[in-house]
Length: 240
Image (tube, rainbow, N blue to C red; front, side, top):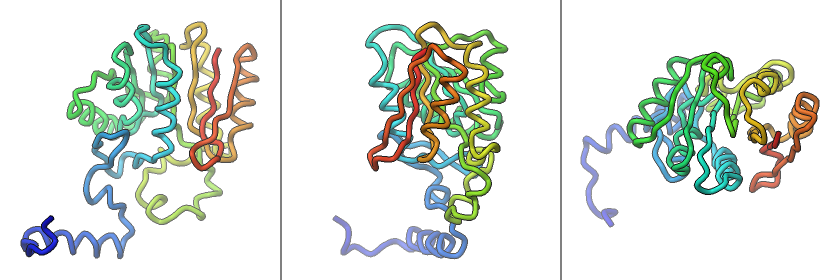
């Protein structure tokens, strides 16, 4: 509507500087703006957190679709980062008590600010994956996680915007990208309720490896690999 109106100098100059900064350094637009949209809401992000991706919205949708209506349940989001999964689930599922863990104190500060801004009730715990959940004797109906899953060998193939600005802690994992899954799956029997469900976001080539890890550690579980909108393996679920 204002295309023919002059742009005020105090708006134009920062905008031009932001374009130059992005072009020269590759800094993500989301870091310049300080936020990114996820599931219809605005979330604060910075260099301590992973920038939300559309594929993770599909992970959240799978959790919501698999949740019985009006039945109280406990959800744990492992490696919450900016809190997008935990906060969205807390706001979309009134019957859920939601916990979120992260080893990064800086990331948890961002997640807490997002929860406060969106008026979401999430219980944040600092620690390595499921360790703080075990320490507090919390038992979950649903475990959901988008953990670091990129192998170090793949780093060179990533765009500069990703490898130079997303935190390594949220991106890379040892053991060909499977280390985080192994740690989480190892601890699942200590935190899962009977008939509990697990939801993992995965790399496009990790469907079978992660599914096999779940099957070998939870032999009575039923696993499924789900493709994303681009028909790539993106989510592994398991009902224990």
